[in-house]
Amino acid sequence: MLHANYSKMKNKYATVFKELEKHREKDFTFKSGRILGSMCTQPHYIAEKYYKMFLPTNLGDPELFQGTKEIEKKYILFLKKLLNAPKKSTGIICSGGTESNITAIWIAKNLSNKKEIIIPQSAHFSFEKIKTLMDIKLKTVSLTKKYVLNVSEVKKKISSKTLAIVGIAGSTELGTVDPIPELSDLCYDQNIFLHIDAAFGGYVIPFLKELGYNLPDFDFKLKGVSSISIDAHKMGLAPIPIGTLMIRDKNWLRAISVESHCVSSKTQSGILGTRSGGPVAGAYAVAKYLGFNGYRKIVKRCMKNTEYFTKKIKQIGLKTIVEPTMNVVSIKLKKPSLISKKLAEQGWKVNTMDKISSIRIVLMPHVKRKNIDSFLSVLEKICRESGEI
Ligand SMILES: *Cc1c(COP(=O)(O)O)cnc(C)c1O
Image (spheres, rainbow, N blue to C red):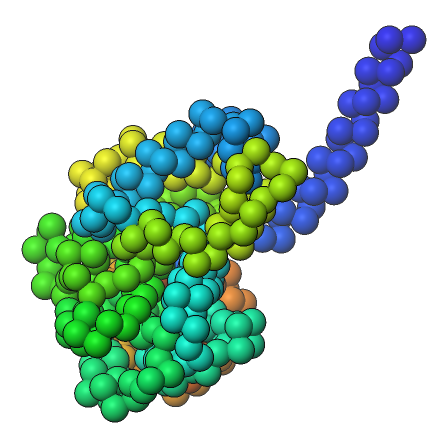
């Protein structure tokens, strides 16, 4: 009887497994090295391990999970160090850059009671969500020839209704960094909330600077910077979903705090209620394991691959929209959608950017030299057949 039950159970497992595996097989995988346009990557193996260990924990109910809460505090301390944040700063763990950006503007709006934000044309589409979510007017500023925000235009757009200005440190499409030091001076002088979207660049720029790359400052070292979005589930090699909104002054949390009944904490400040400690433990485990040195090595390898890839595409006669500032390359094409489609047919996934007539390649850690070489020969062939070169 026992035996019969066991084999029944085994059959049931097998059925579930088969069904799920069938679906999973349709996915592209990071491990194949064929996802070339995504800003996410295969999580570090250590992240995977601790993600699983902390899977059942709920940071929305911190007294039940005091140990996990301690890990969250340690992780925020790591980010404070990475971003030169002052003592009174803190971080709000979010699900990613979108939620971090929403939370930043939510705080700034409640602190000021105003209605408008100034964003660059290169801003992530999450600001479009912010617009209707919070009934906020977006004032968009054009970019310079180098595809960074035009500061003199920002000055013209500031009004008594401005609740925040947004600068991007590592833009989603091109990886460009806005002139944040100038924005910082401007916002500090005029007492305007300055939010920096470093969802992608936050885990890249500090290490590139250490490696001697010439990039502007973007973090709390600049006294006008009020908040920073930084995603661990991109170059932080953490499991999805985790991003963090870092804020200069922890007292600002009060602007978005509500009394929380039914759970152990008295107040809650942030969009989410119940949220897993898994991604936080994952992000902290990688941070602890790699440290700044480990991340710097990974960033260095990604940049070397970026420089190699850029040199090669120029050799085959293609052009970039801008010289890559970080491990993001955009290839200028006449028909980006068509080329993307043909690449996908050959099993390569890149991102299409119709607005700037290009395709985006992100040289994430899962993309190896041999992947780059195989991709380049396919890209060259398709581009020749399609009259791009
Ligand atoms: C990725 C990204 C976002 C959005 O982050 P999600 O994690 O996808 O929500 C926002 N801003 C920038 C600059 C990004 O690169």
